[in-house]
Image (tube, rainbow, N blue to C red; front, side, top):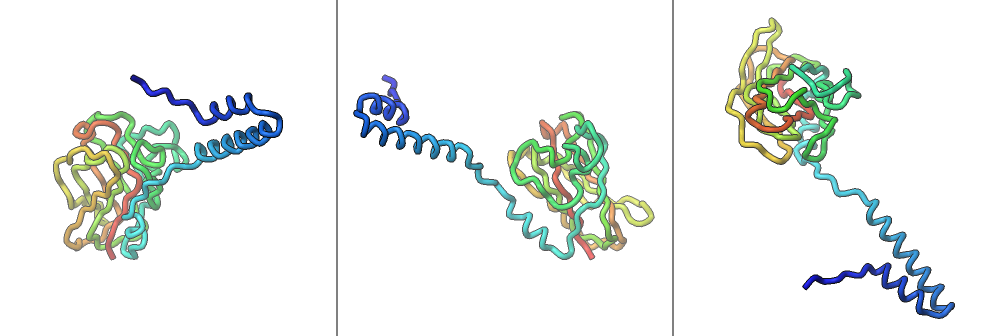
Length: 209
């Protein structure tokens, strides 16, 4: 047997109709107040799911965020920081606070196509020890991280099979011995076939001194 639920507002309307003038006015005011409160509750924003790691990495004096970004492809239809899903969305500090498809992150032109890459440039050359990549949608597709020294020679510092698909934001943190060369350029390679859906990246941090 199904339960029949009658909204409180409907009950008040029925009550108003059956009351005298003095009580009717009071009930009408109650009904109006109820409607206002309901409207406020609906308009209240949902709590944000912020990454606790953002604060720690933002405070790291040895870390720097990208100042330029390029990619093998992009879902963006325009160029520049204002274009949703463009490579430029990876420039600067992270600004995606919830897991899911978000125009404030980079996304490739097509999903599940195969190899994709992004290349980030940083302001200072450093002897690097770490690369931190904030993946905000369909994480786990990163298979390789390459650093370039000041002669443009490439050095692979991370290589692995793609991970199991994760339905949450994460930082891929690649730690390695302090490089004997200076670098300010990072290339990240993804296997988009391995992790279905668009694999989105919000920001990249290079750590070193």
